[in-house]
Image 1: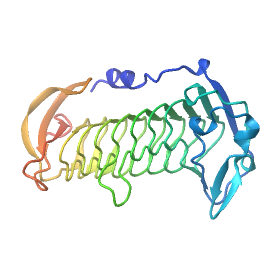
Image 2: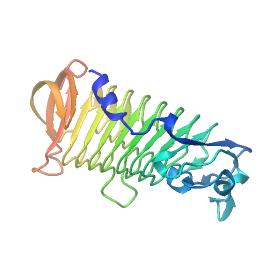
Image 3: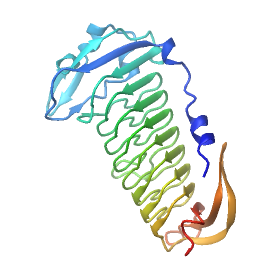
Image 4: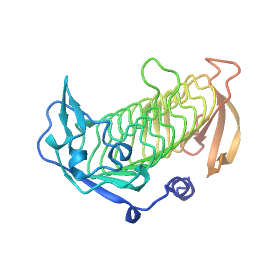
Amino acid sequence: MTEGVLINKMTETGKSAGEMEEVTLIPNKAIDIKLEADVITPDSFAGKSAEEIGMLSVWQGPTTYPLSDFFEVLGNAGSSAAETLIRIKGDAMRIKRIGEGMSAGKIEIEGSAGMHVGTGMKGGEIVVYGDADSWAGMEMLGGLLHIKGNAGDHVGCAYRGKWHGMKGGCIIIEGSARHQLGGGMDGGEILVEGNVEGFCGIRQNGGLIVVKGGALRTVGVEMAGGTIVVGGKIQRFSPGFEFVSMENKVTSGETEIIGEFKKFTGDYAISKRAKGALYVSADANPEL
């Protein structure tokens, strides 16, 4: 499988860091109870001084505290979200909802990120230099979420009790991801350089998922639309898919992936009118 086209197309994000005002957050103490910090977005910081940013509220359990109780805040934000870069210098695995709903600008996390990073983001860019906990990019609408390590469960997924997950934007995971990647996905693109575990693309309705490694089981189960490409071995193949043809190219929107694939459609176990397309590496899955 080729790598360059998809990644290069997805990393076009607008303003460069050199054109943005930078706010640096430096953790100043260990965090025991996890923080709910959906205020850490360029939208919330825009137009504010370091002192004003420090006074923004975060939740810890049932109590609110100023952001400055947990971070040293350096630098003033830009006049708009698009002109604001937030840099978290340290691990943020115990900080939830960073970048939630952001519309523009950039966040760089120089460590790992807690649950719900990039949830519902509409635009801009988030780069996580470590791992990301579960629910990264949940119900994402636009923008780029780039995770340089591994990701947990439910990336780009629908929330509990909902049917529709990610609708737009792009998620790149340079490592591996766990269960239910892209569950309920309606649009957008997810690229995983490594492997996934169970239920990748469960209830997928649209969009593109590319897994360059292998998958454990139930890829595309209950899928009604969209495209999944798996470049490695699928350990347990779902029975509701029917073989269609051999293909040497997968095209989805502006994205093109080259390789030798077996194309299946389904999941017919859930609907005879299903239009999901599942492309599986022919070399890695000779028994299918």
